[in-house]
Each structure stands twice: as C-alpha cells, then as structure tokens.
Length: 255
Image (tube, rainbow, N blue to C red):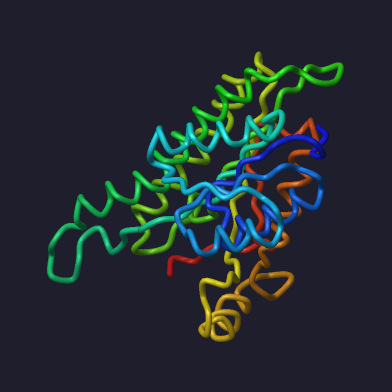
C-alpha cells in the first residue's frame, strides 16, 4: 500500500515509539495526525514537521472520533498506529504481607493497555473501511497495534501488564479475520526493551543492565527501528494477522 498521499493517525505519537513512527510516516509522504495528551510535545512536532496534533484520550470514543475526523479531512485515511502508554499497575499476586494484588490497579492497567487499544482499533477500522479500495486486491488500509514481549513471558510482578498485552496479541488474528472482507489488515508489534527519551538520565544505566541480556545485538532497541517496521508493515500487503516480536531474540527471565 502506498504511504504517500494517505492520511495516518499515530496514537501516542509524542512518545518514543510513536514519535519515531510519526517522523517515518511523514518522511514517506503521509499526512500524519499526532494523537496524544502531551500538548507541549505534540505542538512542538506540529510546528517542526507540519503534522497535525490533536489532544486525544485513547479511552474516549469522542476524542478518537474527533481525531479520525482530522485525518479524514487531510486525505484518504488508511493508516492507524497505536503506540500509546498509560499508568500500569504491578506487584506480586500475593504480597509478602499476604495481601492480594489490588483489583483497582489491575482494572486501570487493562483499561489503558487493552480496552483503549480495542477502542482505537474498532473506531479506526470502521473509518478505514469506508475508504475507496485501491489496487487490484482492494486494499483499504492497515491497523498497527503495539503489544510487548511481556504478553508472552511476563516477569514477576507483571500480571496486569502481561494480561493487557497478551490481550492485544490475542486480538490480532481475530481482528484481521473480522476485517478481511473489508480489505483492512491488522498487525501487532511486540517490542522488547527499548531505550526511549522517557528514561532520561537513567538511560546509560538501563542500557548496561537490559542491553546485556539481549542475545544480539547486545543493546536495547531504538525507536527508529520500531518506526521502520511500521513502514514495512504498511507497505507489505501480505503481512496480516501477525504479531512480530522486535526484541533482538530476547526472552524475559522470571525477574
């Protein structure tokens, strides 16, 4: 599918993975809408690149619909990428004092990391499905979600996060099957440990710790590598219903 001339939404577009995706799709000719709640960073990207920033809470139907409207106004809306974050509860299922893990924290993590992904996916899928098909195969567009390798082998204390990311993984094939008659593809990226600007001054320490655990290359991932994979997914029409691990062959140990 051609990126140039299409409009794209990147949810979480001011974060490390999201910003790299915004830059990659913009450079490939997409008309990008940055959807996030970090106004200062969003407006800075808008000023630098000429993309459109729209304040968007991924859990809100009204917010996501407003963002979709911006994308539709910019051009044929064919690309949705969701790389948003949020609060993540954690802790052992039963603590050292014998108390169970808090239910509220679990619900919050599921709300942001699974339910919000579903919310964005269902709304963008409906909008993309209304576009005119292109090419001999009738492609209308593609949805790229973000899981984590924690969805496969979560570490101690990660039950809520692993459950949410495992849910994103589990939705991928089913969503692709649901949307296949409409010419809309669904692919998920499951990153390993990525070094993003959010780590700030702790970056070197984290790189030394986590990078040493990666088989090859022995470092943490870089956000542009995520963005490059998004571009390939969009352009490769035969990638569908798949979860792609982007982790340097890393498999999480129990802790």
